[in-house]
Length: 294
Ligand SMILES: NC(=O)c1ccc[n+]([C@@H]2O[C@H](COP(=O)([O-])OP(=O)(O)OC[C@H]3O[C@@H](n4cnc5c(N)ncnc54)[C@H](OP(=O)(O)O)[C@@H]3O)[C@@H](O)[C@H]2O)c1
Image 1 (spheres, rainbow, N blue to C red):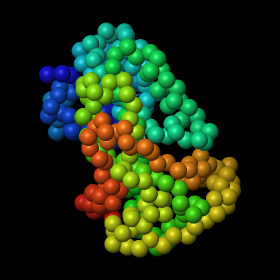
Image 2 (cartoon, helix red, strand yellow):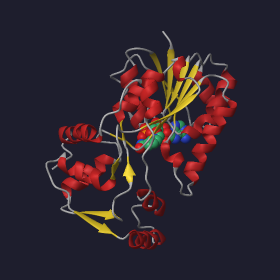
Image 3 (cartoon, rainbow, N blue to C red):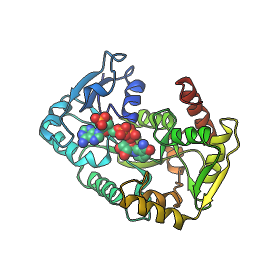
């Protein structure tokens, strides 16, 4: 049986990947913080701890005897993973990276630059086959830190403020579609040395997304559009005082279209990711089951 190393196994994507893969492969979970997750339900999973991904020596030891790697941590771990692979001489036959469609932003963004640089590094330096899967915003479970917050806000507040007219497009990816893509690509030569974007079947506007979130709760959304310039001014002021809940980059990014071209993904993976409506229903159920919705 092949041994698969999952880097970032305590993360939201990584831990769900462990659940999805542990029956079919021998799994090595590479983590830095043992107390963060309970791996008890997965007794066959071997935990290997590293101080930090930048600690190449401990990472090299953790990668020993692994046949493939899935990096569910940041894509800029690529340089450290590369160094560690060279150090330990692990027989790695495939490495799958979690990228981000954030690289397509037209805005100035140090984080997008770092991710683009990492993709270039992979292209230029990786000797073993690689695949990059670039999710849009990931959602679909109570801890997703994205649409779970929107659902809870819609359930809680009678009105929702909107930056600008809410017409910009968004295409969030349902977590189980992302997990399925990792499973499908792993050690499959069809996906070697390729990068794919993954998002929902169709994009929708932010306004439509909020309406859909409300309707998944049996509610009607009441929106208060706020002029974008006003929000930017307010955020700038609050940021100076260290009080802003969002950054100026997030305000600009909210107004940017974030839809993607899914065609290459659908053709090669032979499945169509779910609609946002479906994913939101699953998300609402998860929040309800955990008593997180009033
Ligand atoms: N969430 C989204 O909407 C979204 C959208 C597009 C792309 N992505 C990408 O998808 C990936 C997974 O997302 P996620 O939501 O699962 O993130 P997450 O929950 O924050 O998980 C990140 C994982 O990486 C580990 N990690 C972070 N820095 C590390 C370091 N210096 N050394 C060792 N381990 C480190 C974390 O360890 P600890 O548990 O110890 O902190 C955690 O296991 C990320 O690369 C993210 O950039 C996410």
